[in-house]
Length: 240
Image 1: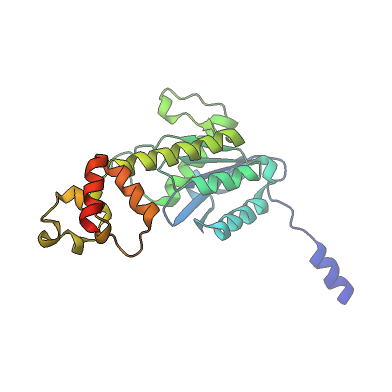
Image 2: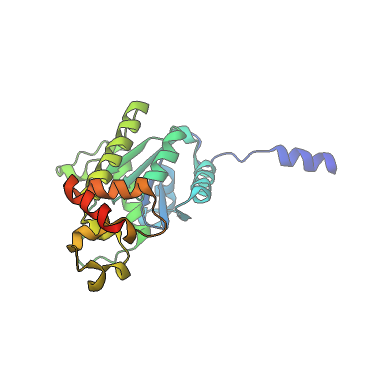
C-alpha cells in the first residue's frame, strides 16, 4: 500500500489541452484580476466563449502562482498566450511575472462596451481571450487599429535602468515646483508664526523645521524653493 501511495504521489497531472494553444484574457483590477481561458477544445465543449472557464486571483505573488497552476492544468506554458488591456499601472507586476516565465504577453487599448450590455469582469476577460484567439489562431484582421493586439517586448536591462532614472527625474522636478510651504505641517502655518515672512518663505527658517528634518533635508527644501542666497542668509540669521 505504501508503495502504491508513493507511486501516486509521483504522478503529474497531464494538461487537458496538450497539443493546442490556450488563450488567456485578463481583466485587470486594483486588488484582484480575473482570467478567462479559451481554446478550440473549450469552445467546442462550452459552445459559446462566454461560458468558458474563468479564475479570480489576487494582484500579488500568491495570486500569480495560482494563475500559473490553473494554466498548467489546461495546457503547457509553451502553448499559452495572454492578453490584457492598458489600464493604468496595475498590470505591470503580473506582466513582469509572466515574462519571467517566457509566456507571451499581448496588450490592446481599452475597449468600449456596446450599449445595453451588462458589464461583468468575467465577460470582459473572456472577450479579451476571444479577441486574442481570433487574431492569432484564426488570423482575423480588424479594421479598427484600437482593437489590434500587440505583443509586449520585455525591456532590456539598460532600458529598465533608464526608465527608473527618468521616473526619478520626474519626481525631482515635481518636488522642485511645489511651493515650499507644502513641506510644513499645517500648525506651523499660523499667522503669528508667518507674520515676518511670506507664506512660501517660512520653510526656510531653521527654527521652524519639523524635528524629523536634518540639515540635508533643510538644504534640499531651500534649493527647491528657488529663493535667493541673500534671503536664505537673512532667514538663517533671523533664526539664530
